[in-house]
Amino acid sequence: MAAFARSAPCWVDVQLPDLEAGKRFYGELFGWTFRAGDGPYADAFSGGKLVAALAAKQDGRMPTAWGIYFATDDIVESAARIREAGGQVITEPVRAGRAGALAQAADPGGAVFGLWQAGDREGFQKQNEPVSFCWTEVYTRQKDRVDAFYEKVFGFQGTELDASGAAGPGTAESGLDFLMWSPAGTEPGPETAVGGRSVITDAFPAEMPSYFLSYFAVQDCNSTAGHAVRLGGRISAPPFDIPHGRMAVLQDDQGAVFGVLQPPVSEKGAE
Image (cartoon, rainbow, N blue to C red; front, side):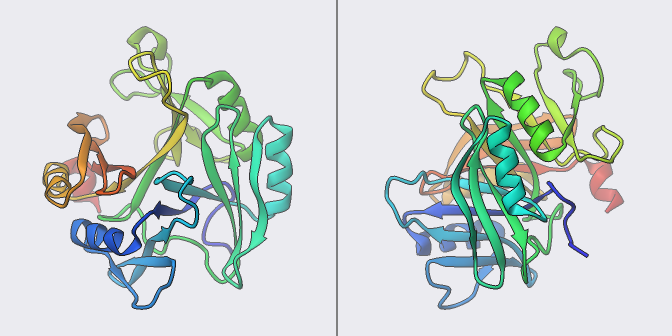
């Protein structure tokens, strides 16, 4: 049985100009460890469990960015569904040895994401715990097309949030435009959500492209943000409170953007 349900986020990696510098940054920030002699693709471990990977960019024109992958049990069928729904397949499905198969695609708004069909490697071995992946969301200017796209391709069911973070009507009135994604076959709502969709507003530069922002859970958001700066990174959005904890948006020392999320005390106490 696959460790990840179809369409669930199952893996993240980051494309970097300097792989060794990336190992130093994330090793210091998150305490991740890496195996010696990894070559151009370095697996990251936390407590001996796979949490992510760092890759050396093979083409300088590629963005320095974190990428998210969604699980599929039929990558060829998923690629076809992406085209039918108005998306673009950037990299056709290709085998990654015995580990599995991958493809790269873009939604109708241009946000890039990956597909992963597991072989020997399912994906994360640790998530929703400190210094591991906990959430992803797409930022877009074409919400109607994009909402329909992810519903058709992945079967996501959307739940609108109001300004308090509560599910239900009220999004437009509050000025918040955020949709949480729950997988097909589940009861839509915050308890089952695996990701979300936000809107790029006029407050951002017109040239800002659509993109996915992925988050890592941390025990102390403020401390992590400060540590990132000491390591040569930057703070894109200073720590602030949200209904589901305290978050910040950071850049590593090479410009790759990621989010960090500190769960509320009640959630941490329940772990």
